[in-house]
Amino acid sequence: MAAQFGRLRKGAVNTTVAAVVVAALAASQAPGVTTDDAGRKVTTGTQPSPDTPAENSATGNSPYYTDLPPLNSPNPSPTTGTPATQGTSEAGIPATVLDAYKKAATALQQAKPGCNLPWELLAAIGKVESGQARGGRVDAMGNTLSKILGPQLNGNGFASISDTDGGAYDGDSSYDRAVGPMQFIPSTWEWAGRDGNGDGKKDPNNVYDAALAAGHYLCRFGWDLSTQADLDSAILSYNNSQDYLNLVLTWLEYYRKGTHEIPDGTGTLPSDRSDDTAGASPTPTTPGTPTTPASPSTPKPGGGTTSPEPTSPPSTTPPSTPSPTPTDTVHHLEDAGTAKLSAMAGDAFTEKITARAETKAGKAVPKVRIRFAVIGATDAAFSTGEKYATVLTNSIGEAVAPALRAGENTGEFVVRATVVGRTVAGLDYTATVTERAADTLARIGEAALTCTPGGEFADQVEVKATYKGAVADKVAATATLIKSADDPAENDKGPYFKDADGKTVRTLTGLTTDANGLLKLPKLYADDTTGTFLLRINTAGGATLTVELKVAAETTPTPTPSESESGSATASPSPSA
Image (spheres, rainbow, N blue to C red):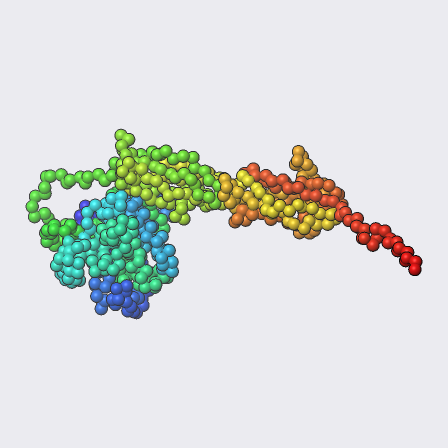
């Protein structure tokens, strides 16, 4: 690899230091053997097995980058002296690459929750395998701007793996090569490949696809990566080397302490590779590009090696500048006509957020990833159930966020739109969650509510709340026995409710409609006062219903005279003989 991009330390030094740093993390266990998703035997356990075939690993045990993390922690502890400056690009992860790792880990939490895959493990492997996709040289869809290929696995210093894909993935029809940002060999990708960006393809050169495939690969044996033994086994199955395990664990620990997002294409290019001791590292090539054998490196005082003298004068032609990606041309974000964002608690927002990516001249930029993130103390989220969403801009430069759904917390929160892979100012949208409300109350049932003095009402009052014709569930309500239609003050006589202690209560608070918008009040009782009384029910949102109650003494029905009581019958005298 191009040494001018790295630090002045070589693979042998890096690997040795890494082994010392994490020696305590690598517990020694006897290896076991199991089978992977393709039915092949794979070694498990925390020690590599020399008998494990290279083709049974994800990478074919290809060379890897041995660069170590910066000496300073991402979140350094306070020191008495002046701390060294932390390398911003070296410590950070390119935005699209970081997004791919987090999306893959989220998908694995749902698909294989017992695996407990941390996104930081994918980041550690991605750093060691490809330097985070060559410093984040990817487009908005996650495709690498050029193919990342490992050396030909022809047995010359590496494993010997004859071609398995006809050159379809690696462009080599003689021997296999590790491919893409996570460095899968073609035979492994054939069964482990995944579609991580939803474009219908499984491409090892796409960081979303490769990260998701790596996640499933690491979780394929039912390992629990929150335990050290299973974590070690999973990493060794990716590349069967103790030095590789130590290095990945070092980066994993570093990223767990904290990292940050940097723009795509600004990451530090890796420099040192595990095969550097055998000679200069061959640079990854694109298919069909001839390679020139490297001259041996020469020892350098104090350890390491120096680059060999060039065999021909350096070219005076300046290096070509890569063409800017669409993301590189974004100058700012503009709101694209988003209306007022307001919804009741528990409801979906009817309006969606739309942002437009523009150049400095105001021209729309398509095919740019916009990330929308819910910010603030709120339980609102997107319809996906997550607090963030990444959307590709369309042909007119607009990205429409998924629908928002309000939680139960009322108040304001912010949704921030940012450009993935570009450090331009974000665009904030304020959203408001109001309390649940009803605009209509209707009584269930039509029977008159009557009672005798000192008795209890036979029927309980039940009402249904709606809002714009739909069921109004979980709406707060109050019920008060009032003095009159014109005087809503609480009455001091007439019907009443009872509290838990049996005491008289004429106002009920803390009532809530159920999932069907129904509210059934407790039983009503009457004192000795007769007359007509009113019960008023109010809900949040202004819905009101007044119910009439009557208390009257029971009337005794007047007996109806029977025919025998209506008069005496007079007997007619018998006729004389």
